[in-house]
Each structure stands twice: as C-alpha cells, then as structure tokens.
Image (cartoon, rainbow, N blue to C red):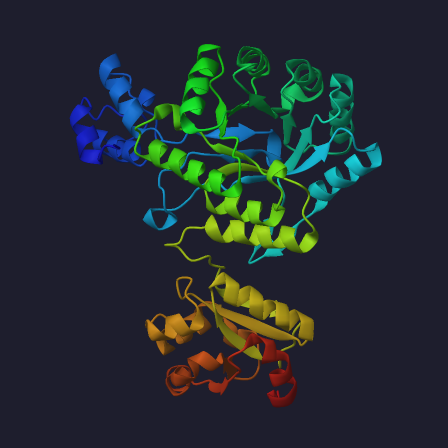
Length: 444
C-alpha cells in the first residue's frame, strides 16, 4: 500500500538540507506521498530505504509515452481505481487503424484526417491522437512502405502492429527515431521484440491472454532489456476486456502485482463493435485504444466522453472571468451576465455568435459552478456582480446601465439593482432562446 507523508518523513534524514530541491524533508515527503517527486532526489538515503520508498511512492501505474513532439501521447501514471477518489490524469490515446493492404491514397486520407481533425468543445481542442498500422499483408517491405507513406504526410504518433520481428525491424528503420509503440511481444517473439524496443528506445506492448500469462511475459521482456512496457490482455470479447482490464488496474493500484503496473493497450479492431469498444476502453482503464476509423459523429462522441472522464471531478472546468465583446458591440450594446462554468459559457457563446447580435458577455467568477448551482449555493450574489462591474470597468464600456441576467438568477434581480444601481432584465432560462429574446426585448 502507498505510504502517507508522515510515514515517509520518518524514513528521511530530517536534515532539511534542501539537496532534493524542496525546503524541508516534510515538504519532500508530501511530494513523495502524492507521487510528484522521485525518491532518487534525496542523496542521503541508504539503498535499502531508497528501494522501499521507491516501490511505495512511485505511481502504481508507470508513465509511458508514444511519439515525440507536440502530438506525443503520455499515458499511465494513474493512482486510483475510481476518478471520484482523486482524478484520472492521462487520457487514453486514440489511434485509428490503417492496413498495409490498403492503397496509398486511402492510407494518406486516413492519416490526413487524423492529422487535421479537431473538435472544439468548452475551450479545448480535442483530437484523435495517432494511427496504428497493421501488417495484414504479411510482407515486411509493404509494411515499411505504408509507414513511409504516413511519415511523408504527417508527424503523428504511431503504433506498429506486427508479430513478425522482421516486419517490425523494417518499419522501425523508417520511423524508429519517433518512438512508435511496438505491438506486440508474445511468448514466441519476446526476445526479438524486446531487442528492437531496446535498440530504438521505443515502448513495447506485451500481449498475452489473462493476467498470469501477462505477468510472466512482462518478466521475460524486462529480463531481455525492455522496461518501457504496455499491457495487451488479448481479450476474447468486450466483456473479457472489461473484466481483465479492471483486474489489472486493481492489482496495480494495491501494488500486489508490480508486473501489472503498466498502461493497458486495447486493440479493439478484432472484436468489431467499434463504438461500444471505444466507450469500454475510455471507461475501463485503457491507456491506448486502437480502433477502426470511426465516422465523424462517433469520433466526436468518443472525444467528448474522453474529455468528460479525464477532467477533475472535484474541479469544474472554468473560463477566465471578464467582459468579452462579441460581434463588434457599440456603446449601446446589451450586457449579458453569465458564470464562468465552461459549459454554460460556451453554450451561451455559441448561440450569441449564431445570432450575430453585438453584445458584451459579462462573466463573473462563481468558482466554476453553473448558474442554478451558484445561486443555490450563494456563489452568485449581488455583491459579486457589483464588485465585478467595478473590477472589469463595465461602466466605461457602455453608456447605458441595463444588465440582462439568466432566467435561473431571477431571484437576485432586485438585490442586484439595489447593489449596483443598474436596471436588471431577466433573460430566458434556455440559452437557445437568447437570440429571440434580444431581438424582441432589447432596446438601447
């Protein structure tokens, strides 16, 4: 089990020498307990204590990285089984599959779609992370040519799927310097695959059915010199993946099986049901998900689900408070009050931009709570509105003194008028009605 900060502190020198980069040994102990520092930073620990603390304080699931540069994918380094316990940190990488039997124009089309596709949602750019090239031709030369065609049109992270070490070697000769994920080492080829992973410094997926077989194969790959690993449990069905991935996560979290403390790869293509498999992978601990290319609506749904799961449930997504001009407003433009909960802000923003009505979107800090929750919890108050008007210089941006508030904030209308001296208009509850409301109600 993971040690608490006080337990760790008792094992430290307690000299507060600052050699670790932290002001005190207690500060260092707290960082170790949170998994945010490495025990090797303390030069005064004896090897036995260092080994003990290292095993207890490092993340139970190790970090792995696929690719290089801005598009690289970091997975693993997770601490909990359920996101409400803390949070999940590294989103699973989604990789669309390309077969080396496809014609080059189809290969390039998928690579370019992944390269250029972006879904904008609540202030984030959501993307498919990379491509997985599967050696279905049986030819090492054709496998390498397909990888070369992808390299020519993009700099995407890649998964190389081939059990033939010769095919992997041919592909790695093209892209080995860019840290592709080698997929996969099996009982029959683990020495050759581990040798390639060690030679090119690439992460290696270990593929075996069941946790016992995976555990044994991990040990073999480590003995062969490969330490940067991911686990593929070779599921027979979607249910098998969910059960085995959950078991791997449990044993990694409680540190009862250190050999299972690596991110999971979910090769979903052989199972079919790509939409269901994508959902299962996102929800049930996959670090890398390999899928047939999804149609645009399914891709958007998958990216949205991933974004929702891999945000901190204890910290709402927020935007920066302020007064934001939209559609080139003049000094007679309406001023609309809203909160800094991202989903509320961007939903309202979308409707205002579609309506093309010049206005000022006045965002106050409710600590990321929605309008209804902020009113009920006392985070949206007349005092906050008055202070925000002064803070953001709203009176200097318009000639009138009229403020439109959300329908769910209607109980505050009289108090806001008394506190600010502004006339308050109560707008609709549904953001979809804001365009019609402004056209029929607003008079400068």
